[in-house]
Length: 374
Image (cartoon, rainbow, N blue to C red; front, side):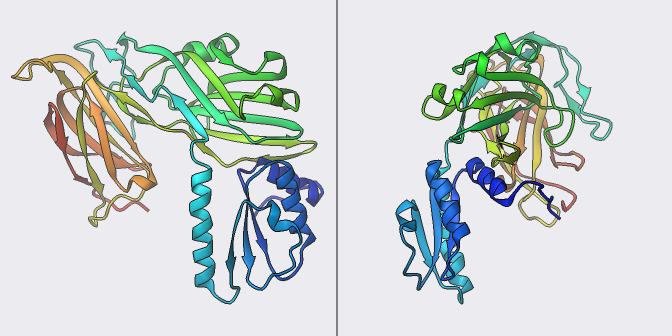
């Protein structure tokens, strides 16, 4: 059951429209003042407007002049409705791409000292890891996060960005005012940082920024908000990492959440010229894993210039977080070395899928889980 708002319906609708990426209107033969007003609000806020228009609608006034794109549908044909929605979905996907960017797109891992012992992931997952090891060498530098934010005529915009816990943001979190550079003047925005203590994004670092409109709007270049984190330490584990975000619009006494942000991935390499291991993870019924999961390679690096693959004694690790759309496929950049490979669906125990595998240049490896995630 959804929550009940105490605000007048028109205020709630207005704030929801101003927080959205685009408006989808359904225009039927029954005239609706609500729909016309919603389109007017979105048009005034310069939001893309898409519409499903019932066939037979002839008198829509000037509505369609404000619509970015529309398709027609027949109410008595569910198949035609699905086709129409699919057409608009494809267009919407194209319009909303590249609204969140992280630079650089590639980083090099930090490293642990040779001979450093492995710790365990947790009591639930007693498998080896180096994520809590001391750094012998830190690869550190600036990381820029940019988000295209909704254009507001008035009100406040709060945005929270979540950075994976493998990235060390110690200095940024201790002194966000001096360690985060933005084009928005400090007198009209407030930035805080910390560590997330609850789900979702438990353990992630967060950066929170509050902008007061309309004053801040004049200082946003092309609608983009950019934050430069001056001192970020790269993870000890190589892999593909995703940053996430969430926005909230506050207008008068009503608030609305934006669609969640997912940024372009950052690839953290194990070496300047890394080795790669790729493949697919399957469930116990031999189906691709259609569930969030994780693949980890844990081992000891070898000398990439030695033909006998002599061990350097340096512990190394790579971690690939699987999303629903990966369907179990992974591709992990690691330092050349010998590895044990583990896999799991999130909230399930890790299981070994290969042991003592030499990865010098590239390797292909598929694995199966002994369970069927729910």
